[in-house]
Length: 199
Image (tube, rainbow, N blue to C red; front, side):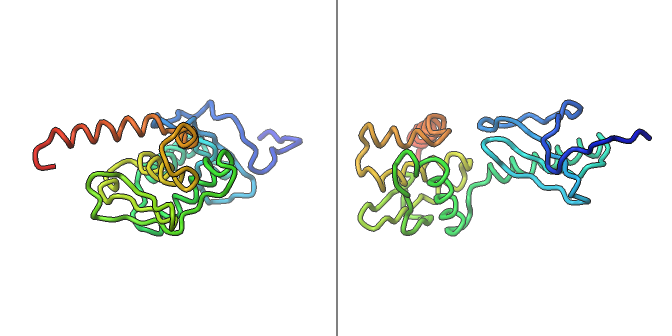
């Protein structure tokens, strides 16, 4: 077996040319594999700046790497597509969206006093009480993709800065990366519901 003078540093991003990367949904830029000499058995993955980063131990065969990349990408994509189920998860998601997309352009931290699902909101996706900072999302949104729920949270968080729907409000909301797509999704969903008897 050949020996190498230098081994790659731990967690160095190496080419993934030998791997067949699975197709990704909109909003994800790609997949990057990081192999680490410090890892022995554990495999993990996370979202980082729109990419799925898969962390693998060094020494796996190409087929083992392929299997793990497929498995971890599927896990991240599934988790990303699943909306937050509890009020606590929803509040964490709101804080994440504010931190990642809205705080800097808003020039301040946008934090709701509370965020929760409600079952008595039939004609709107969400609401924000500017006085109390409380955000409420319609339980009907639970059936929608996470990026749509995220958009509604971004919309309501933006009301903590701007009460109305003026140009500055919409400029802030557009910092959420899938704002236009999610707005179209909700428009289509509303149109479909309004044309369905008994909805």
